[in-house]
Length: 87
Image (tube, rainbow, N blue to C red; front, top):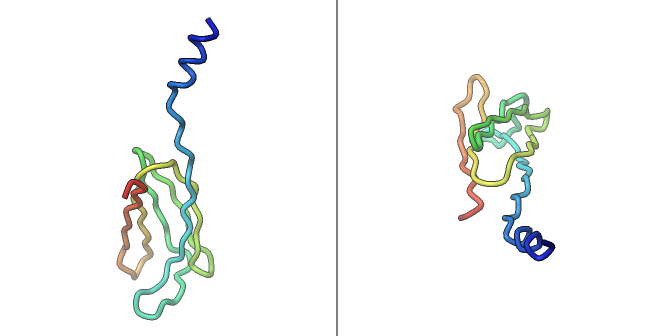
C-alpha cells in the first residue's frame, strides 16, 4: 500500500504558482504617470481589477499561466498586453 501511494504522489502534476504583475501606466507622449487608471487582468475565465496609485503604479496577484492585461482611463486610449510565460 505504501508503494502505491508513493507512486501516485510522484505522478501528481505540480500546481502552478501564482504570479504578481507589477507595472506603471503612463502617457505615450510624455511618459507622465496616469493615476486612478483601471488595470484589468483576464485569466482562466476570471477577471481581476486594480487602480493605479498617484505614481501610476499597480500590483496584481494572478493565477499562473497566460493572461490578458488592459489599462484604461477616460480620455485615453485603452492599452492591451498579453502575458504568455510559454514564449
